[in-house]
Image 1: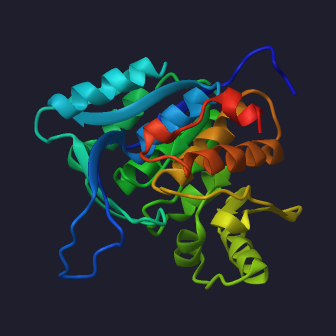
Image 2: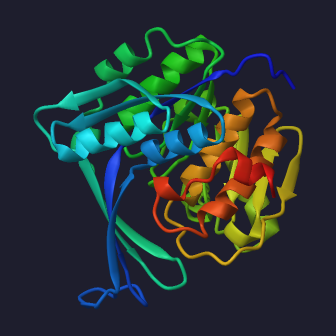
Length: 306
């Protein structure tokens, strides 16, 4: 492990404001339910990953696009408070900042609908400009709440620079071959792994088959997150299951973002990928015991105390 310097973490992705309603159950189509609480949180998968990585000790910069509105102002203020460099965030006069409507039931399961707003205008030109001076040693975190063309371009630029790319393929979306081949670590959950691989996952054997299929697409490493069943880490050399930490989940909204951010932070500090995955498991096990997205992200001292 090299502890002399930290590698820079660049998050390219979405920033939203989450509007959350808690209820006993999730609504069926056409059903109206009475909820028991409402709160607003800063969110968006990109913003969540940035906060997760920063709280886990990473040196983080954010590349995103926000509207010129109170939601955008609030999002930037929050990220700055968390120590995230926001120089790569642009403001959009034509679209509002993104929002997400989230329903959460008493078991912590959720339903999410996102209106991307300015996130949808984070185009390839903005990505090119933001990544123009990226350092070759950087770790780049991405998700799929921005245009796939921008994800593809970011992967191309970062691959040319020799950066390690961590991609959370959520919301699930078919990916170009170049994205797979340029990605160091793909972090799908069970549903996303099924969609991308075309293989139904019901046990460890089927999860392994799905991972093998994703590796065939060209990605270097795959970490399929399986909730309480742990994480399957696979590459061309070996496949291993890392056990989950048993907790009583109350809100799984940002668990995947927390996982990816924690892995990136650990890698940026010189630790191995396996050590990064273990750190991601511990961090997300704390995250799901709390409500909200960015507010639920644990700090490094909390994870180190487990």
